[in-house]
Image (cartoon, rainbow, N blue to C red; front, top):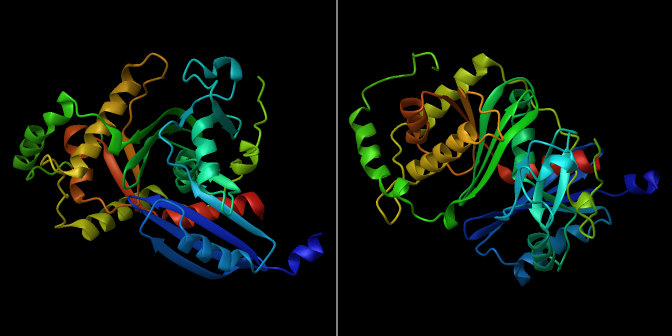
Length: 340
């Protein structure tokens, strides 16, 4: 079987939904490395004939192809335990498929959403549905493994938040920004934003930052769709590199303005307010340890402005470091770790 497999290329198809678009990134993998890659963006989140033809044109070249999707289901999340006896303390998982990761924490998605995903992509089928919390754990594996911090994955219409401490998930929250109901807190942020703008001359950068595990069935069986216990290593990201990356991002975004939504509030400030509310929940809910968070690591797939970072520094006295992320490539890396 291995000999037969070595005669063919492996084709990795990776799908990410972004706003009203679908990004499809394809890699041909031969003799231990990626030999070719292709990317196309479709102006729809539905599977249409053009998308099916595009994907089929690549997967027909080999019997060894693997199709992956980044999960954006609003019913997903992650909890800091793998013990079935304690899972319901954090979330009712009776109607969800779930997967333990690293024997320490669990991510889940409702069965109904997974069935809908399976139906939507039945034209070519899916092998893996990856959780954004797994993306965070992989993308920031150097930090997750040895420090306490808040990690944020920014997508066009979603945010995934996770607090990790020495590889152990402490808290997680998945926020569907497009479905957030306006609250008094969001209505009042315009005044707070103006107050911060008036204080823009204040530079705080130099201040110090104040036992049993169940196997999961696959899509046929969720386990086949998503088992991310083995993660690819990424380059060392030391504290000095944190600083370099922080200033590099400042140069990239200097002069950029936050885009405004229909209510006049900047998208970055809305994101910050939602994160702030979630952090407050972590601090006040007795289910969580509530450890004080000093550092925030952001995986940015949308191109945030410098303001997003400034809000954390000036209003919550947190040090913020930003890495740009290409989600389709990260999904491909996770697929590699499953197959190769």
